[in-house]
Image 1 (cartoon, helix red, strand yellow):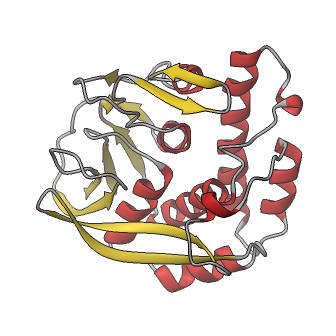
Image 2 (tube, rainbow, N blue to C red):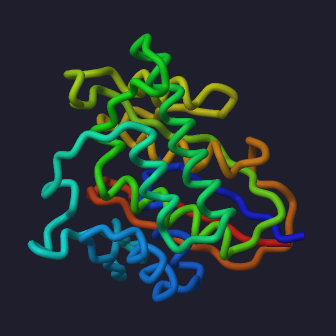
Image 3 (cartoon, rainbow, N blue to C red):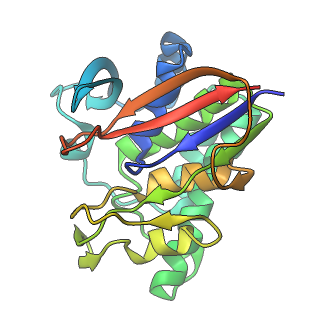
Length: 243
C-alpha cells in the first residue's frame, strides 16, 4: 500500500503543495498540458531554490503577458458556479475534476458560514484568483498521478499575528481557515505571519484520510515545496512517501 504523509510543520499553501508533489518527480510537462486546457493565460514555472539552506522546488503561476505572478495581474471575482464551469471545460480526468470542484466547494462552505450567506452567494476573490485555481487543479492532478492508497496529515503550523484580506485585518488563522481546520491538528509556534492558507488547508483536508504523527512505514521518497518568503527556518512543506 502506498502511503503518503503530509508534513506542514512550516505551514502549507497551494503552491507549496504542488511544488512538493513535483519534487517527487511527477510529470511537469503533463501538468502544463492539463492546465493549458483550462484556457487561462498563464505560464507555469518550476525552479530549484534554497530555503534557509534546504533545497526545495518552487512552483509559480505567472501571467503570460507580463511574466509576473498571476495574482498581481488579475482582480476578477468569481462565484462557485463560474469556477466549476471553468474546471469542467478542461481536458482533465473525471477524478481530477471531481477533486478540484470538491475542494472549491469545501472553501465555499466555510466562507459561507463565516459570512452568513449561501454557498452560491460566496463571492470569491483571493481564492477565485487565477493562481489559486491553478494551484488547486494542479494539486488535484498531481495527487491523482501519485496514486496513493492512504494519506495522513501531521499537525499544521498556522502561524500567528494578523493577515490582510478583502475583509480587512484578521487574526491568524482567519475565520475560513479556522473552520477548515475543524477535526485537523493545528498549532502555532509564534511566527508572526499566516503560514497556512485557505487553499493549502483545503487541499490537505480533502486528500487526508486521517490526522496524526508520522505512521510506521518503509520510507521512500520525500518531496519539498518551497514557500515564497524567507524565514529563520526552512520555509518548506514536505511530503513523505512510503509503504
